Image (spheres, one colour):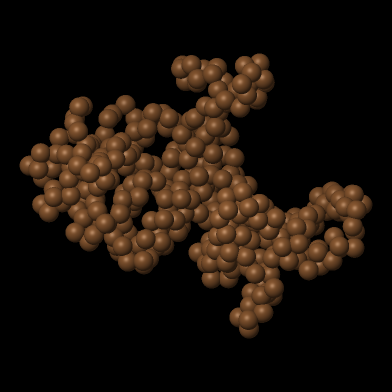
Length: 369
């Protein structure tokens, strides 16, 4: 979508947000053949420029995004973060003891604990720690028992994990899986790459190696069942996501698998861009802040009203002082859905979006123009 055009690509679905939920839904809908528009309020973290607390006056992108060890900087990079302030405690005295508590922020009273959110392509997958640890089977079974929903059972959930994952940290089993031998039950062809977090070079550090060895020895001594613990270690080679480990509810020392590709961050940003490259029926609109869901006369969602511009959300670091250009996207569950920009064409249809406008006036009939 651009300012020179009065209409955007036809769309059946409008997805607001490109994080772990929205990005995944949008990609799967596009792969299923649907025409999808993604509205993301932020920009692309690998194309933005922004500082962080380590270098307040410089540009730390794309390194803050790419480098796994910089995830803490990513969460506070000014180009990506939205500053939210939350309460962790009911008691004010306890709340104020949190080291990230602030009474005022940029001249405004906030009285809360800083809890940055990600306003960028990829959502929270652009600033999380990238650690991927699969739950024990007992955890899944407890959810299934609590909800009475059999789809939460361990065997069912593991199938979804195998479809999601593209495991790169168990190379021997990757080859054996091609022959049908896969006791690890890792996924090998999913979109989300996983790699080993600790490079072998780190183990050459004597102090680090000694610390790891002492921690493993103490854990083994406290386990109460050292034989079972040693057996689990040699089965999984300290892989916490190995099926034999999670199905046996085995704990103990392990390495941390990361959601990285080529040891750089991988999230729904990469998922969406890769899908859009392969499927032209997926359109990603950056710097598009959704402001209202539009309903028809039967209260069905038929479109989204959004503002186009950078840093329009007031929680953004150094928010824009402009209001942005108003856009209206009309869509439906059929290929005839039309995304309409707020322009001369929208004016001609009577799509006024000022204060007091009833959003239900934007009916499906309007999409024919």
